[in-house]
Amino acid sequence: MKFRCIKILNICRIINFLFLFSFCQIACQNTKNDIGKLSNDQSCDSLIAAPFHGTIFIDPDIVTPEDYTTFINLSYNGRAERIMFDRRVADWITSTPYLFPANYDDSIQIEIQVNPEFGDLASAKLQAEKFAPVIGQLSTELRKDVKTVWIHKGNYPFGGGNNNLLIHTDYSELNYEDQGILEETLIHEAAHTSLDAYHATDSLWLHAQKADCGFISSYAEEHPLREDIAESFLPYFAIRYRSDRISEELKISIESKISNRIEYFDNQNFNMYPVEN
Image 1: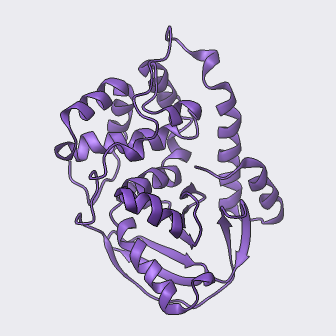
Image 2: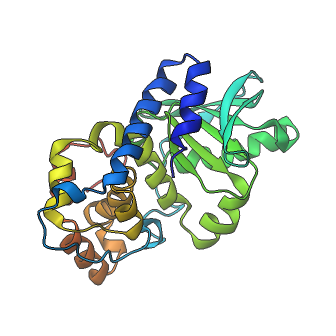
């Protein structure tokens, strides 16, 4: 669910921000690598069929609203000009959002930027207060590179990357929240933000991909270097940290499909606070 490479490059030529430049390099390289789909270096006779279309749907109770959040509080820091991505125009916009620094008990602070279209400070604050605690349920590892959150109206999917989490509230209500998978979706998107740059092109990860002879979802199979980390991490999280909440059948399916990826994740020493194994 990342932003398109060509538009990213265009904005990078205009805006000389280091974090945008780094994101452009990663996104464009992933797009180029997606084309090959590992076909030139596939040691398996054939790929095993993916058991899921997308992993955010595998179980709505992997994380629940009752789970602990590291969120402490947020404050209001006025309005100021910011560059935000908006899926409704499929491009970057310059806006003056309401700014809410959110504090978490592992010393992480995230600036939540709420589009002024919500009308007034009180309405904007409600949006920040709604999503800040859910983001606090993500592990420290998944929040470590999240510097900002963009909140817009609109019936478009979430996004991750660029040191950010992108939220469209209408789509959230009609899809993620209605299905009880808001928390699971944010795990997926935060994996894009905080894991992709370190692991998506790691040689050991690519070896694990090939050794598994398949993908956990058809979405990951279609985009092996862009989506496989995010698609695989939520099932990994489910079997390692929430195995009591999923069926034995689901657990066996995940373990049998991506055993080498699971081993790779096990070896990373992720900071999973506040989640306990």
